[in-house]
Image 1 (cartoon, rainbow, N blue to C red):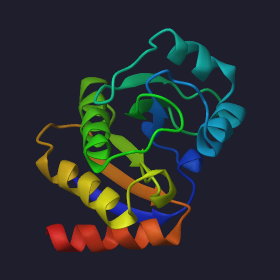
Image 2 (image 1 turned 120 degrees about the horizontal axis):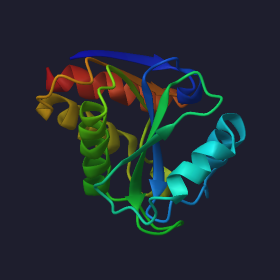
Image 3 (image 1 turned 180 degrees about the vertical axis):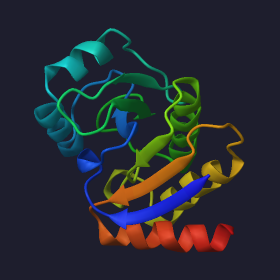
Image 4 (image 1 turned 90 degrees about the horizontal axis):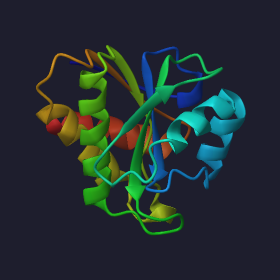
Length: 166
């Protein structure tokens, strides 16, 4: 699996799938989720709503509406909006996203940080969990993963975690 890391907005990526961390009720409760809804359009919320609730450790794939990506892979990291995220939930969400990419034959997948220090997981622990799941994934898809985030601290931690995992 090819892994690339860059500073940028996951919503701008022209890939087969982008990962959207959410809550089990699939409510667009955070700034990132609200921005996804504004830019993608209501079709994403309608498609996702048909599957709620979604357990932490599961994933739902929808179309991407008006986004450059083809699909959105929605992965709950908490049961309810406002709950603290735990590193194990980040790990389970990353694993679910990768398995969904395999199931839906998404060759390219863009993954942002799946938590923030403010919501419960320090950048080093969050990025380490994602990198470890990438290393453990043994399926054909995704063939390439783009780790992308607007936060330079998260991007640097992706780099450090990848270097430490090699």
